[in-house]
Image (cartoon, rainbow, N blue to C red; front, side, top):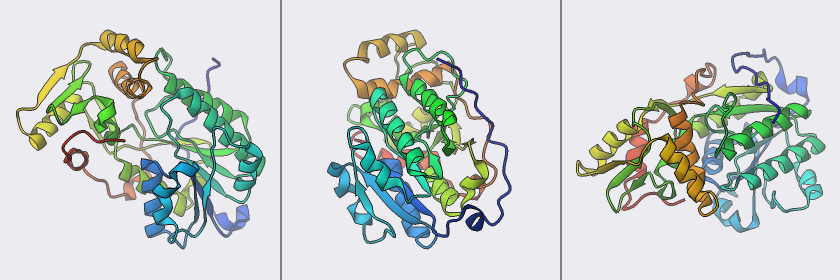
Length: 335
């Protein structure tokens, strides 16, 4: 695969008279995948804080419409239903033609579906004349990871940016480390509240960056509402709330659940690679989550630069408090 050249997130373009310069008075934004965790959080912050700044519309599959119907009366735009994987792309182009910015919050366990959906969306944005696009990156820094064996999601992100760099579309990528909530989903198999246990691979001392859905959603909503995305055309913005280790996470869980929590080391990186091969064709969901674990053990994808414009203005939530909130149910969190 051809190596993609990735830019820095440190360059900041001067923004003067953005509305007049780009010829739009109404900032029309479409969130694709608005029924998921991140899409719902961003919708919440934009509706509650920026109704007058953003004309917001949402897009999701027909079967997910009921999940976002509660926002219908608060939206200044519309709720649209469309299947980005299998729908008629000419119809999607028509839907997109009036939007200034399209934000992709879709999430797929199958990497082939993820790549197909993002390609479809990017191509339709280009044809529809959409000015800006935020891809569904929202993860670790995939730019310099070269060993992508059993890391198809990393391959997808790299391929998406090859496509973006070859297109005429202006984009802004947000890298935020690992969502702490994803490590707490029951399908991740990291924690099991019913058995009062936590499992991990590696030494437990490997450090990695984490964010919460709320913190990222607040950042994205402000980035959009303030039109800050104009200043970072075709660049990466890195944000994270805290750096943690699995041993630290285990200590938090013991404080929250009690000191009888059983913490089990499932083995080394070699053991994790073996497990990845075992579940690759049988459990796509677990395969998805174990890829996060592998990147952590490889000590790659670390975030080194932090956005110094919008991110410092966001009030962050303690990651330990997020863990406390999300693990207060009887079992692990269901998706």
